[in-house]
Length: 94
Image (cartoon, rainbow, N blue to C red; front, top):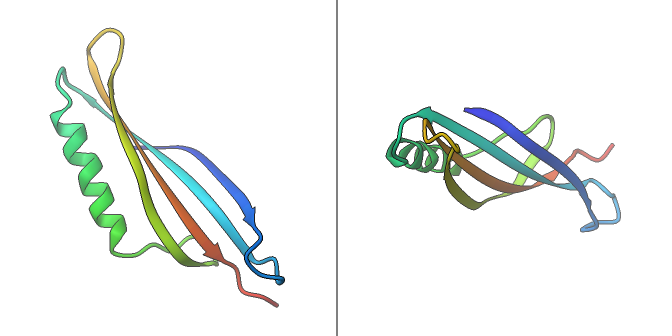
């Protein structure tokens, strides 16, 4: 598994300006002609992260699965899954 693209965006939920949206993309690769294993891996990651997540020093207020895509490399040698999550994180106000 390779952690792919991440993006942190400020969220205007409170006047304290302490909420952020984090968009997390994971890339799963496996040397195989079919997509079966990467589909199973993507489902296992989604299930594992459903039970709770901690990001840095912030409290995760909300964690959502956004979606999965399943691809093959042009040579057909590797199966690839792209799994995306979104979270709302509250930093402690000092």
